[in-house]
Length: 128
Image (cartoon, rainbow, N blue to C red; front, side):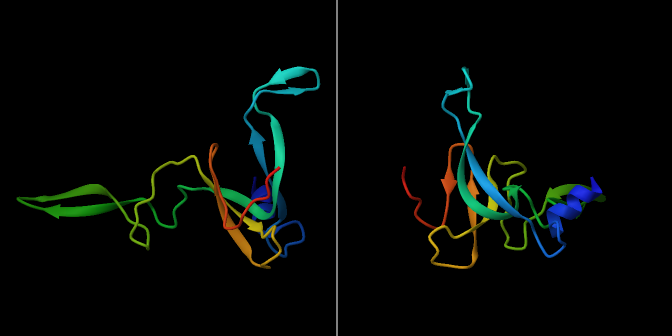
């Protein structure tokens, strides 16, 4: 497990996150090698860097201890906002991925957001 985490964070050569490829699963029933499957067929979408992370990932602990005084002192576990003062959900279906700009207009890595039924990207996708 330690080796997998090291490779994920630093790549094979230790120079940075790994070059990865992002695919979308086709959720339409498909004939694959003589039998019908639900999904299972993947379509290449983008060159990417590293691995995606769940939308609900947070920098801070989502909960904090809060001391409340009335006739005596009580401790409560309360939600804690992120540094941007937003309260992310405790779970979400989405994933963030850093991808190379497929339009070639930028050398920057661009974040994309995808869910099983939604894909949000900062560039126009070519249509089949």
